[in-house]
Length: 338
Image (cartoon, rainbow, N blue to C red; front, side, top):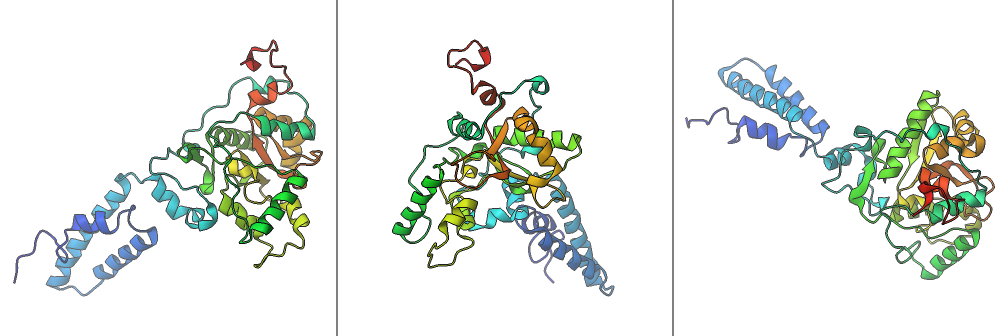
């Protein structure tokens, strides 16, 4: 009988079985669980010299697997790919976590600047809010590229874009460098300043008894296309295009493309616009939202702004932009001078 190597199983050592076949980088949790169950079945088999030897080997392999799972650092990309279904959906567009993506925001949240509770924020009209986001100098945004495809018909795409612009929609840029995006809970991504500001707003709400939920954040062109076309079936006729444009932006025109827009809700409430959390965040011309650098994306009195007012959507511009919006370029406020 040939001599076996130390606890080898089909020519593979127990350490290799653990680290190569069942490491967190290679297989899913379900697969590893199945292998643990197989080990348990083996341990329950009849006691023979052969089975005792095999149980010894597999026990060592299982122990190595457990230690490997605890010690080996799990790449963020691998964790997201396994736990977040949106990574696997092709409609998500260009977003995909690069290998060197930093830790999720929830692990390195920065404290909000002190003193914002006592600031007096300017009052804005609906058009002011819309202009504020469009003119804000936000980092990590690319130049606006060619219009993305909406349908298979160039003529129909042009019709959609024309009517969208007539309603007040504007082209929106994508992030310039996706490595600078930050992951939030449930695999949603935001630009770093917006990510930090969202967590601060979420914490502020919790301290006041409101549980906010992040429903949507960054969206690529393909994802927005799927959202926009959801009620329609190919070949697209768009008999009710005007009604659809009241509810959704076509790809290329969503503020979510920037990574600075969020859709939020309150736990236990189906309609955010009638929830206690919305009453809290929108009071005094959205003073709470402003304190954290957020403004309503499509305010109630926004006029020609694209969709109908959406109380659940907010865009990040930063506190400085909010404070300085009404300031003249050569004003006396040192915060607002270039």
